Image (cartoon, rainbow, N blue to C red; front, side, top):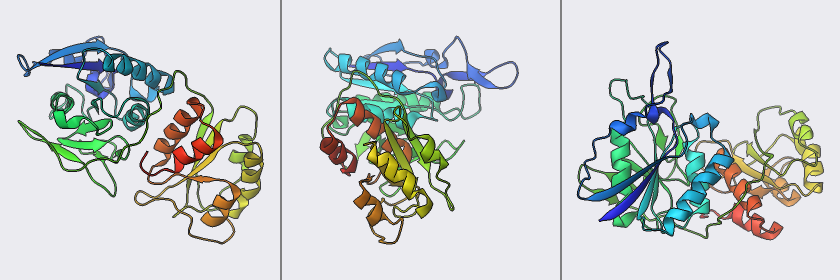
Length: 324
């Protein structure tokens, strides 16, 4: 009989409406009322790691989860389910995807409706996440996000709607599997690469978004010894207004890694245009193009690469590799 470790971290899936009508954490986790349908089939071990709204979760908390999962991978545990708030769920999931073994099933899930709401999705998502983590086919898929009966890769999934229960989508590629009442079905295999377990996280890794007529001041504020890295969500295929070029050159002269993705919902950043501020010029300056990730995921990847003490060349390869 398989053993699944469940790590609760808080979020809407663990919240209820309070006396004032707002949704907030409480001392009683609604998931504790879960009537285990897997009795005699799975051994479930539950640990309450945090009870935090997901905007309160950052790299320090993600590192705690990574260490607990790495410990579980060396114990008699067959898979892990992490329950998490949805606002930063994709970032935690991707952090774990980069730092825990690819062949150890880890599934992250959450809820869009609190336990007191009509049509609450928390218990159902919880059950399907457990099903997925226990599936033999969940191995070698990387960290997975299971919501609304769909299985997505942590690498590409993103939250697309503020309240809809079908908010988690994978632009361009779609889900890699589905969860039915009695089965877990996978239709695609994710390309995998090395993972980088880390024992600390660096700070001062920033994410900014480009816009028409972009001012250089934000980049100028980052021109200091504390800045460890910068991710820019650039325009279109990977372009920036020429007004920011002098500030970028100063940052690059400091050997600060600058990573570029597109702010577009679909597609990848690539070196296409040769005008002033175009992708070809930015690449020639030494900016790294991160292919296929959104801004928040690219920031997590840069943070993990820096925390793993990768060399300049290793970091560039790690960030520009579309399948890692």
